[in-house]
Length: 108
Image (cartoon, rainbow, N blue to C red; front, top):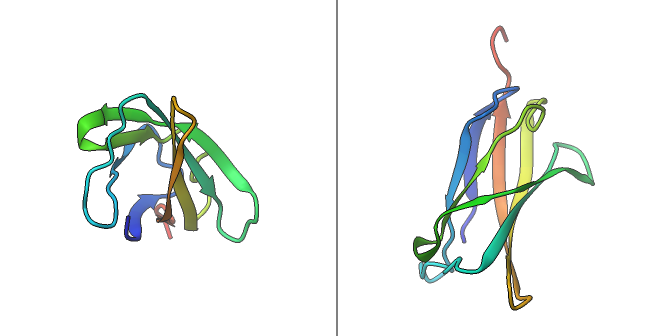
């Protein structure tokens, strides 16, 4: 999956981040029987800020979403993220190179 860049506003919450997971050759990832986790690292940090369970929207289409919670993006800057897909067989596939650009809210 090529780099994904998402724009967000500091302290916004209860909106969805949506993703369509594909291989580099643009083949859709089948999410049947998988659990998904969004892992996010805050700007300037070397540890995870949070991990959150994601919902599968359409398993055959490889689409999923994460509902942003209060406090997830409480500081402006570039957050690094990845999606960890774990299948019931134990296979794990990680989609990395996701940047969430959090901008300051008004007034600036």
